[in-house]
View 1 (cartoon, rainbow, N blue to C red):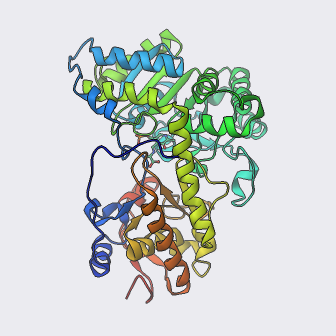
View 2: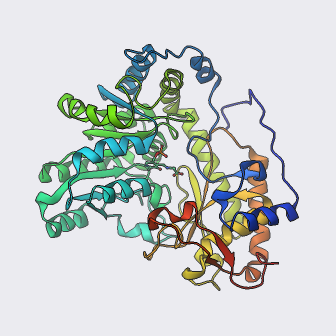
View 3: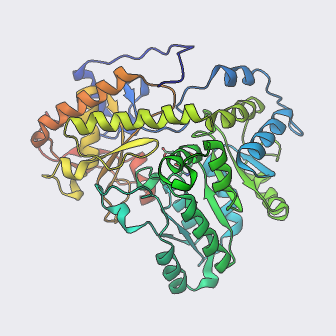
Length: 453
Ligand code: F0G
C-alpha cells in the first residue's frame, strides 16, 4: 500500500506525437538531450528526482549555513551514526564526489579494485587513478531470467582468483555495491557481505560499501534471507553496514534528497587523512559540497529511508511496474530489482545487432510512442563489452502513481506490437571518454522504420 498522499502538485504534459518526433530528431536520438518538459513519465534515473517529505521540506527551513561547525552537519552526523553506525562523516556534493575523495586517496597506478559490479562513476574513478576495475558478479546474474534471491552478490571465489592473478599486494580495496545497480538493481545478502569482509581481511584492504540503495537492499534481505525474516529494515541495514570500513553514499538515492552525498568511516585516522582532498575538491569538512539546508533535509531523509513501510511501498511499486510489463509480454530482467525495471531490449528487438544499439532504439521508440524516458544500458553505455542490451526504467521515489505505471506499460505494449518496424541507430558523434559517451553522443536511424519516418 502506498504510504503517501501528495502535498504539492507538479503538472506534466504529454506533448503531441509529432512534437516528440521533432524533439527526438533535434536531440540526436539521445534522451539525455531532451528537455524534461518534453517528457511525460521520466524514468531516466531514481537519483535526486524523488519527492521529499513534508518533514524534509520543513527541515530545509532550519538549515544552518555556517561555513564551520554547522548545526545541520551535526544533525546529519547523528543520522549517519544512528542509521548506518559510522562515527566519522565527510559530506560531499553527491556520490561521485565521495568516490573522488576516497579513491583518489586509496588508489595508485597499477592497483586493482574488486567489486561485485562497478557502477559507471566508480569504474571511471578507478580508471582515472590508473587502477583497474575488476567485476566479480555471481554467474547466475548474467542469466536474465534465472530466479535467484541474490543475483547482486560478489562471487567471492572468483574474486580470490582475480586477486591472486593480479597479485594480492596490488588489490587496494574490495567494494560491494548494494543494491547492484549495474546488475539490474539486484540485492546482496548479509551472508555475502560477511564473506566479502573475510576476503578484505585476507587481503588486508578496506571493505567499502557503496550504500546508495542500502534500505532497498535490506528489504530484500528481510524477504529472502531466512535469518533476517523477523528483523526490521533498520536492523538489517545496521548489521549489513557493520561489516564495512567505509561507506560511499549518494544522498540522491536513499538519502531521499535532491542533492548531496557523503563518506562515512569507522577509522578516525583514515577520516583525517581524507580531509585535505575533501577540502580541496568538495568543501570544508562540516559542509563538504552541500548547503546546510540540504544536510538538514538529508538527515531527516536518511531516517525515513529505513522506515519499513516506506521501503515496502517503494519496492512493491517497482515490482508492480515489472508485473504490468511482464503481463503484456515485455521481456524483463528477473527478478525485478529495487529501484528499476530493466527491459531486455536484446530479446525484444531481435532484428538488431548490438552495433545498431537495440537498447537505445527501444528507448527512442518508448519516448516516441508515450513520452516515456528510460536509459540505455547496453552497447552505447558500455562500448566494447558483451553486456546484455538493457533499457533501465528507474522509478523516482514517492513520485509517480498507478496511472503513470499503466501508461508506461501501455506504451511498451504499443512498442511491442510493432517491434519489427523498429530500425537501428548509428553514431553521428562518438565523444570521449568512451565510458561517458552515452551522455552526449548524437545518433541517427540507419534505415526507414518507426524511428525514421
Ligand atoms: N554509486 C552508485 C551505485 C550509483 O548508482 C550512483 C549514481 C553513484 C554511485 C554516484 O552517485 O550520482 O550522487 O554522484 N547513480 C545514478 C543512476 C546517477 O542513475 O543510477 P551520484
